[in-house]
Image (cartoon, rainbow over all chains, first blue to last red; front, side, top):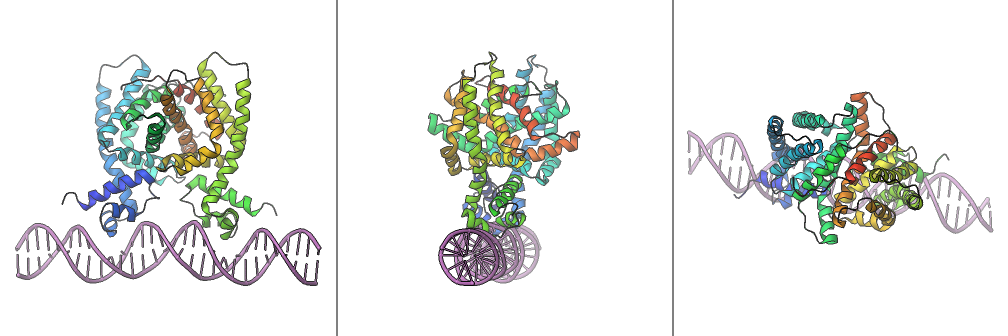
Amino acid sequence: MTSSTIDRILDAAEAEFAAHGFVETSLRTITTKAKVNLAAVNYHFGSKKGLIQAVTDRFLGPLTHLLQVQLSAYEKSTNKSDDNEQELRVLLGVLARSCQQVAQQNHHRLAVFARLINTAYSQSQGHLRKHLNHQYGASFLYFMKLLRKHMPVMTNEQFFWRFHYLLGILVFSLSSSEALLAICEREYASNRSLDQIMADILPVMASAAQAPILGDF
Amino acid sequence: MTSSTIDRILDAAEAEFAAHGFVETSLRTITTKAKVNLAAVNYHFGSKKGLIQAVTDRFLGPLTHLLQVQLSAYEKSTNKSDDNEQELRVLLGVLARSCQQVAQQNHHRLAVFARLINTAYSQSQGHLRKHLNHQYGASFLYFMKLLRKHMPVMTNEQFFWRFHYLLGILVFSLSSSEALLAICEREYASNRSLDQIMADILPVMASAAQAPILGDF
DNA sequence: GTTAGTTTTAAACGTATGTTTTAAACAGAT
DNA sequence: ATCTGTTTAAAACATACGTTTAAAACTAAC
């Protein structure tokens, strides 16, 4: 047995979810791609919802754990720069590197994660968002706490909004990465990688974090 | 007859699409909310796909038309600032104001638009993206051309990526606006409007547009 | 008032989906 | 080798969906 049924399902589901979204991909396409019987999903994961949760947990579990470690290491580090924007890039780099390390070559994982965030914030009810917050909120709150230090000249509410604007850059880029990379290759004959995109985004997010707050427009 | 069947369908579809997405909302929920017979959708719009197109056309048609006018007025205007970032805010403000003017109080319209962009870029095939580009690409290319002038220190490819990072801010904020506004009200007892969010985003996008390009991280 | 064209209605159709069921195949322990 | 619990397999189930049909209701012109 090269790989277990469970792993083959998770891998196939991850790829399909990343490419077509959660509701758009059926269990039948997943199970045929995984070369597994249809009923296997409900046997091992209970339901489609359980499968989605398992796929995302496989990424978010290690990610939040690694993030916790890396952030506390960053917090204890002494060689902080005086340049606030530089320091923002470093902090955002901790998150980016943690994502990359957990995704480990697998370009689907980040796309699934981005889709998850997207759907979580697109639901008016917000059940998924509450679940994510309850399950993995601690690590991300920690990250936000450190980020907050480098964005001092705003109220908590202003920080809330600004944070989600930054999140938008990341989520949109990752969930659209497949299409964007394809366009980029066709239009500019340039073969980029997800890692390069991540590196590309960091200074953009850092600048966006420091943008002035203007009342009018 | 207070409002025609077609308009009632469009209004109901717009609200449901904005709240739950295109695939997640059924024709039955739309027609019951519109107090219209189920078959009316297929009679008037041919198919669900036709309905989606009609909903988005109702927004994108006027928007691109208005944008075309406003942008050429902007291009001809003489009181340009020497401050590049300020000028970026003005140009982005043209887009924002056009969106607001066309959306006209209807907070669903912008959310549907954002969802459309999101799904267009989330499809690996990209049929929807090509359709939008073919139908409404001219106005947005015009906008990009003007934007390009204020982001000179990068290659065309770098501009391509940067543009989509900016797009991410807008799309995520708009498609998540309902959830974000709800959280904001609950957490900070602050009643914001979509217009305020738009005004809030402009300087962030302007700063992000001018962020430096760093090779490493 | 009749007629021709349009719109609305109720019902049914075909299909795709997630899920369940029941039995068979398998694995490891005794 | 037998037994026990676990996993796989094929089939069926129930439901929700988009779509189509055919008749009824409506509208406006003659």
